Amino acid sequence: MLPDYRIDAPKRPVNLSLNSDLLRLGKELGLNLSSLAEQAIAQAIRAHLAEKWLGENRDAIQAYNRRVEAQGVFSDGARTF
Image 1 (spheres, helix red, strand yellow):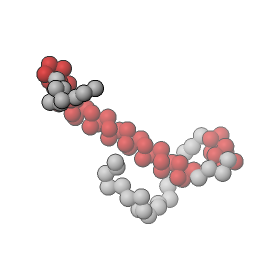
Image 2: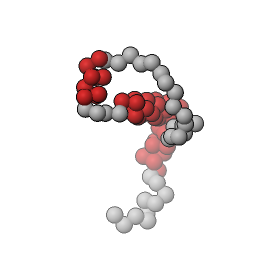
Image 3: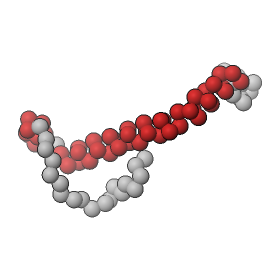
């Protein structure tokens, strides 16, 4: 999930510097380079935010994992598998 990201937000022209061979091949293949750039940026943002969240919550996750290792989970006695 991306914060404040509207799929229908208006487009803005930008200048990018791209590898000329990638640009040529993308055009030859009929790829929508603007769409691909948007997808790649969105994916990079998601990855960055996920890593940031993990960093912010690392201590709590480790504490939970230690507790589960020591005490198990509430459903341990109820599971049949």
